[in-house]
Length: 152
Length: 109
Image 1: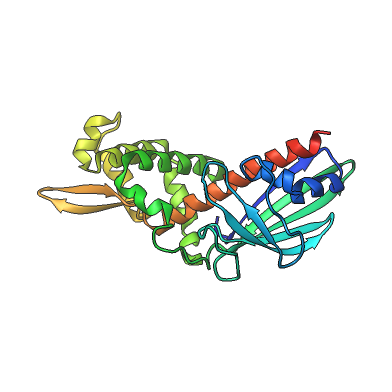
Image 2: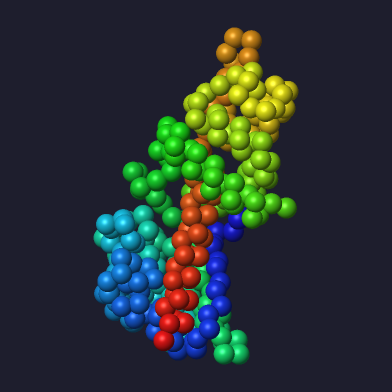
């Protein structure tokens, strides 16, 4: 928790090439990230990738950083700034690493750069929770889950 | 949001690892503000235990207090540390969901 990054891993019973396809093809991104329909992806460094979190009604313009099939894929996304193309000052870096393990693929995602993010006024979702007991109960629940997973 | 803020998260989660403290926080959050005596009346713990838990929560800034007559009145305090920790925890949970979805898609011929 002390680090400025979130890292998660999953082992998938498929080749790296297959996982790469799911990770980067418009019809797949639309399903694992977005609302279910294909999303626009310009798969090259500097290209824009449209991310639409389901249920949010918002659109995020991620900037592709590195495309190295089927090993490494990275993009920046400005999760506090809908409709603004991500750059170094407003976004976190999302990196995917694909490693072969026998017939399986270990997929690791790392999102970093939270500490230097400037959240604009009105986009800091949690500031409003203080005055809502319902929101507060939800916060305590989330914290409790986290505390149980991370207790010494 | 600063790195220093995130570094204090461990302390925060240690304070929250105790189930009675979480129960206390939920009650306090629902009430808005309360004294240790009022909270003890609602919970299956002694006033003394409530006071000790509140002291721990106050040390990590999850609650703040102000004198009210002969007692102290406590309120919950979601300051940036909490917001940062919750946010990162949510980011992690969202990635777990997305990775699970990627796995299903990749494993489906």
